[in-house]
Image (cartoon, rainbow, N blue to C red; front, side):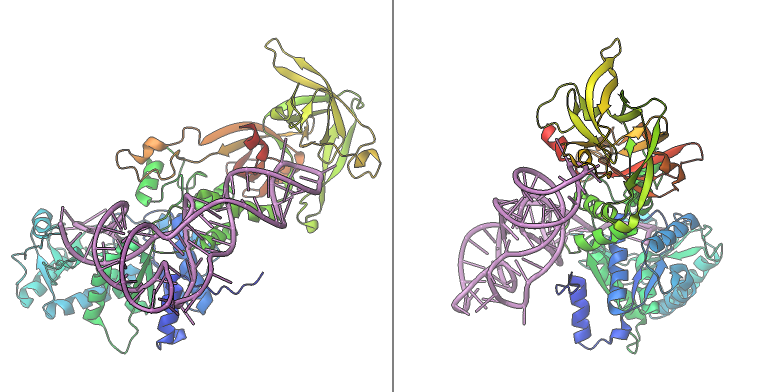
Length: 559
RNA sequence: UGACCCAUGGUGUAAUGGUAGCACUCCGGUUUUUGGUAUCGUCAGUCAAGGUUCGAGUCCUUGUGGGUCAACCA
């Protein structure tokens, strides 16, 4: 593996150019600035990996900054989950900061800007202001309050701050240009009155700064060299720069906003609003439902931090709209788990097999490798006895030569155990098979070194001893939506594309070693897929989530 | 009807103006006590038309297609 990656993404290219043009490397500083109004998702992971990745690459600090300027939507619960998720992904921030830390500084600056004649208090209704704003193709018109005197503006702004006005009655606006081609420059609102309790500043403030006014100034205060955000903020860049101009000291570093395309994943949605809707309407069980594209959902599903980081790196970044195939994400987790997950045996859809020539009451504890990919993973013991379960789909009374599994008159290897031969079946009144009677080759035990143990038989099946098996609930997940891009259809609502079969609950039987498993432990159920222990597990009730199935080329042939 | 952004195989992403590469997916072979893994291989791409140039995916022009922008949200 050569680690030298000589192709840079366009953000790295910009940084390299800045460095080449005289920016000192020790001035580099980045930030990840979530609003604490929801849980992080795989799209945020792209931003996290990008920013923290740059920090690592350039040995530069990365701040975690909560953009908490809207007390109506933000909660401590979200702050906590975001911190947890970033840490879980494996990143360490330099400082934990909050936009609300800058409320006083922002206020003081706003007063200066008023004094400079660059901001004014407007007491029109939001409808009036919207009307005056114009449209992308038509210029706006000035507010009747645009030319208030500095003294009057100062007095009104103070009253706003002191709570003398009702919510919604007054705003502070930047005085820029109502005819500007960029709508964001048409006298944008800097402050609004919100008589709300803030999760950090409590009731200290009843005016709250808007995003645009806050974000650039926060970057400037923290001396962030490169402020990276998603493409929809592109047209905010003029404003970002304008606001910094109002307070800029040339002796200081001037932050630079640059934008990249947000990452979309096929067969899911990625907007917080829509994810919140799924949660609130009970379509999923919560933000951490294993079907959700949230970090917490993926974690519960069994994804590793490593796999999500690899995914983000492999998918890369650019400025194009994209829908990344979820198959890439699945590849990343399979690749990781293949190297690390212990193998065990579990039967999800059981049928009983009786080995008629195996002594009644006898049992043996056989040795099984924990991971063929990793010798250091060692071995464990699995019990074998006269009656076992195998998967229903692993047996057919008759089948063609392509069917490498158990059929009447044919042999198959039981993984880590014996070669058995199907002799007959027992059926119930409906013709359903209730038992498969087999005989076993007594000399064929895996690893015994006998000639019979070396025999090549075409199929190998997983199994569990009925007497020793542990019951477990297994939750099998499928994609949440039936469409690749459920939210890009203009006629239909994204919920019209919900997959009704996104969750299937099975009662399965697992080998007894799994009784010791802890929540979030990950395993490969051999021949089936990767599974992890769900947090709903109790002492008496094991619950597994299927993270991802193994590739199944037989199922493909069958189609 | 304006401004801005984007356009490379099915998907994602590379390529100082100099051999269009990598990964996923699909398909096929080999190995295999997991129809997994590994390994080898196949198919498959520069939106279009002009221009500049010895040479254009890259620069220019026009067109086409997609996206973004008018919350007291971020």
